[in-house]
Length: 475
View 1 (spheres, one colour):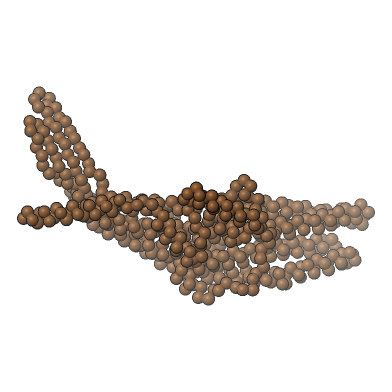
View 2: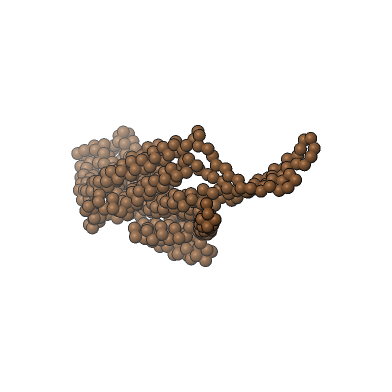
């Protein structure tokens, strides 16, 4: 090779190395990635993100929280406090720091390897001193491929963090409505308990006067005792949902003494817009964007593996050996691809790429179905809640009142009266649960329209019923 060509090649390699080393000095701070996540979520209706940064900013956040906690808590203020204060959410943001650090690490050359050996002659005479310095050469060409994979993984991390923030906000809203529903049930069972206690006291007076039998007295007492149990269960459920909401908002000590309105709002006249719901959900889906990004990452990973399959590394260096005089010369080492030619790794990465492609398609189908399920759930809960309020509850009240009048006139027995009261209580309880189901379905559809499939959350009636089909090993 002519000297000029040799110098040109060496100069090119040197410039490439310097460029990669300069790239390796990139910042490991994930604040830029966090700002991008915040900007994306702001377009989706989330504006209260805060990543703990300085003592002064933390103090301002604490003051803002104190002002919010002095007011009656609403779903919006509960979400705002949770986004500002929950430490688990702060830990989620560190995912961005990990991915950013991995990206910087992918752009770094490995450190040169120094080796040395000192040999002594067994029969006497001079020993041999050997020194070597080696540096991976192919890394100069593999680093851009590694960075491409790491950058795609950082994009994955940003989408995943955005999805987790939406999950977190959704769970906070769900638990706020659970608190309201349980508080409403406590209020209802307190009223029922008072009515049952008065009825039982009256029955005891009648029994003492010989006007009712032991059976009728015990039947009245059974309804009273059951009302006490129902009240105690409702109180326990309220405490549980409040504590879960405290966890989500990151509150403790005196902060947990917040107050809220004790009743769920009635079904509103203004409905959520569900026109073209499936199409809008697909268009906004953050989950599909994440699935697509995983396909891109898998493709980059496959490309890297194909490039590095035969010769994953090649070291260039200098060896020096001293017996009587120093002998210095170049050194070269690389693996000989006799047994492992990288085909299993290529096959694995190709299968991972196809796996992500299949997951994307499956998820797109599932999201459409989930949107239809929640739309049906919302409409059914809306119709049922209105029917309970407009028809069932007034009807059960009239039945109880008329049965009470007939009982007073000795036209029906006590068992008929107790059954009417029990049915009225069950209707009241069912109405609260149906109203809660309406609000749960409403915020689930809002979450879908903001780009996230609702994940199962334990509620006052068990887990949220809909979600994507999952298999072992899938996230």
